[in-house]
Image 1 (cartoon, one colour):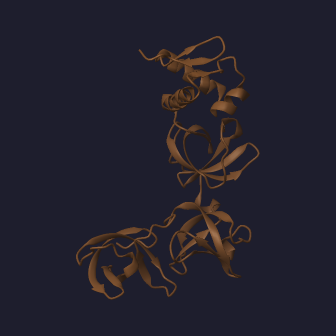
Image 2 (cartoon, rainbow, N blue to C red):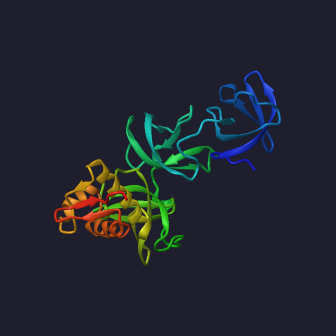
Length: 277
């Protein structure tokens, strides 16, 4: 089985002056010399990425593109023609986005969030900005508290729309954000709540795992500030968010957990790292 636009493990069939030929289903596939690993021999198996060159010939490379078919990635436009735009995706041959697949006319040097797919008419790998047709919350594959991969999709009045596991859309609310994010950022998070087909997400890990991560951050900040920080449970949410990058609720849970572990103590004006025994 040969998968265009993906990684394939193929056997070297024969050598040539300009590369090696790999075994395909009904054809030999060229891996040009510049991409052949040193010491490669006939019979070896190589992991290669397959795509079509400018003459529509199937070709292999050991280069790794920024995304494969099915991925949603942020790519930079390098040139524009009346027919469409070409994006840098990490290979010698740029990725084409037809003008009909652009939301607004692309401009060189700008970055765009696109999905990589196989064009049914040409059989070639292409990209599209029109992501909504690939996303649906009708049949969910996630549930509350599941850890998920997210891509920041666009800004909304209440936060940011995110793409969940390349399949669904969710909302990351402003009041759950404690650091700046940009369109195209890839984040790890979890499903906080599902109401009908509406999904709310949060950055980080659910439950105590998240508290433990924040605990490491507080201990590091204590160490960097001579073992003392002037923040406590009476500090304002704005002060805590500005310094620690977390909500006051998470801060209180975390310092409470660290206190029980005897890793810090409370003073009248802040928190102090516990002395090593």
